[in-house]
Image 1 (cartoon, one colour):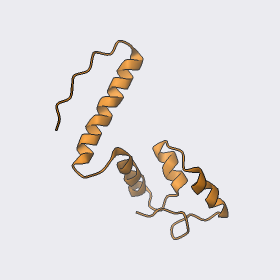
Image 2 (cartoon, rainbow, N blue to C red):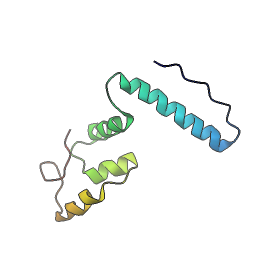
Image 3 (tube, rainbow, N blue to C red):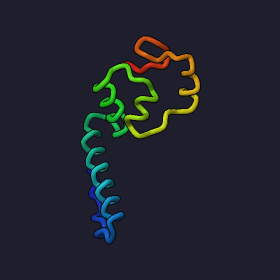
Image 4 (cartoon, rainbow, N blue to C red):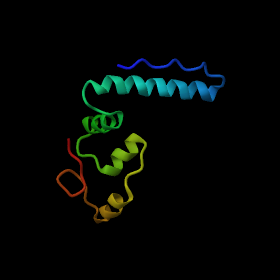
Length: 90
């Protein structure tokens, strides 16, 4: 693992929160790298572990990301539960 340059001490609440978030993400990425996973992949796997067969839009809501427009637009047929087009199964 490469040596990381120490960061300057944060001077405001916003900087403290940003610093803490960056440090947490970095730690998680290091831990997940051992399993050849990214943080985003882990979040999706975590969502599917909690509730198998989630829709892509549900995973997007769970992870705080927006579902791709083309996929949600395509899903107007009302399907998407396990075994139907558009569902994600783990």
